[in-house]
Image (tube, rainbow, N blue to C red):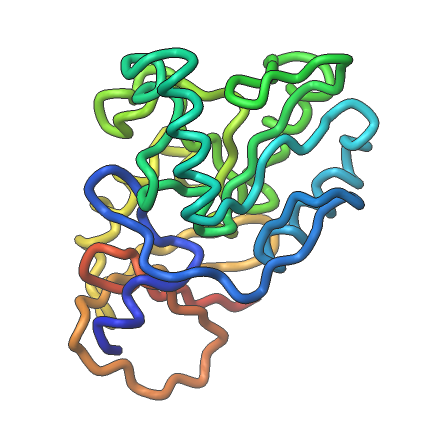
Length: 238
């Protein structure tokens, strides 16, 4: 596993300290809109929405953004609302999760939806979405009380795809992504994995620092870089 692979995968950490390094090449449109997500994230979002009949009351507001689009949003927000507001609610260009194609802003469907801060309450159809999100691999990326870690204000509308079982584990321990990435470094590949079981599968999750060799394995697994020096290896079985 080489250093260039570290910047790829569903579990990459993107924040003010760790910039985005690549543009996704598997983007697809969601719900007959011009808003895009990476294919896996879009498929899981569609399954989630079908379970709760979500598109009847929830609107996609913003998905993938290019660096140019993120810069334009930053500049416009800075001009209209000032630096304090912009730093709270808009990620620095080059450091935005929206550039990964794994993040989506959602809003309660209504006549006017604020692009920067869409309304997304804890009750009704929005509450159903939040309750079901982890089952389909989505996390509330910027929860209240973790602003000192994420460096972004509470955003109840911003969801990030990390996949299963990671979303379930993060919900169980109330981790934000920064905390989860750090937490996993103690579970060294291959001899000391984190064991997690849900209703369908048993998972073994391990950390491997970049530059190490990953042997050929017969188990079902996926490997994701974390964008900060290593890989997260997820093995599973029924």
